[in-house]
Image 1: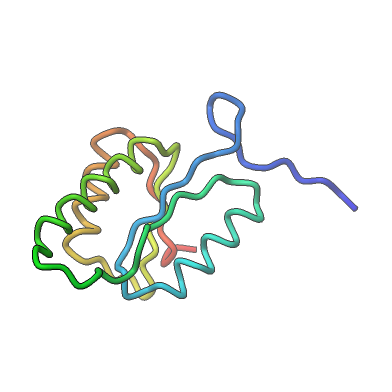
Image 2: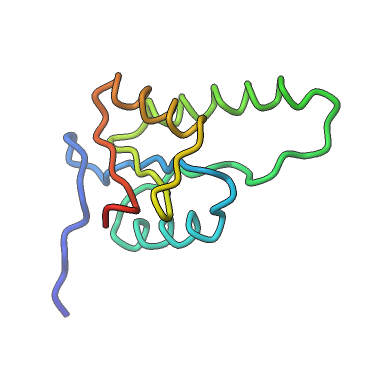
Length: 111
């Protein structure tokens, strides 16, 4: 059995990839997460795909957005889960943020 070397970061460690995209694509997130993990990458994904019933949803969304921006900062690369090329407003902001940091951005719809 031939051993393939896992994708690596500039530091020679496993590449860290943060997934971004709409929460409506939970199944696609799981599929991409599994594929990249099997390839030897460290995958950072969404913490939840639906919000709990709370009184202050806007504050929670804002806090989760900030956490996701931190996940982007931690990544070597950002992978956009965009079946059919769909990009919502939040995902567009995440892409712009990743690009402003010089992070490579890959798209599921382009593979």
